[in-house]
Length: 176
Image (cartoon, rainbow, N blue to C red):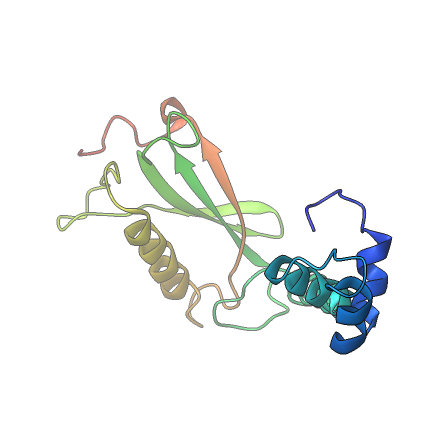
């Protein structure tokens, strides 16, 4: 029942018996090893073990198959597009607040544009202190905006990159 623990052969055999046979063999008239609720749960576990394992295996295979087929999420456009996007997060360490975020757009592996979040006056703004939901919303809106037919049809998000704050090219001009 715990990971790594061997199955008790007596309990596995007990699980194959009907309830009446199990009580006569392992209850008060038998060897008196039946322990009520814990044995009931153990019998259920052993009875349904093969079905549960088969379900887990098929679920795992289904997830792997769908990941291979779909690859990365598409946002608009045609699937045959060669435009991809990387989300770059500038932060001092992986679990630190995000200082800045940008969307780098590539065509056939070559960087063609970098999109930064901007304020009301069009200046690049820092994302320090912004919640993750707001950052994800900005990335999604930037992806949708850039995947319009007039720009980069079929833009795909391929990966997230974490960079140190000092590597941020807009470090000097950002308003915190």
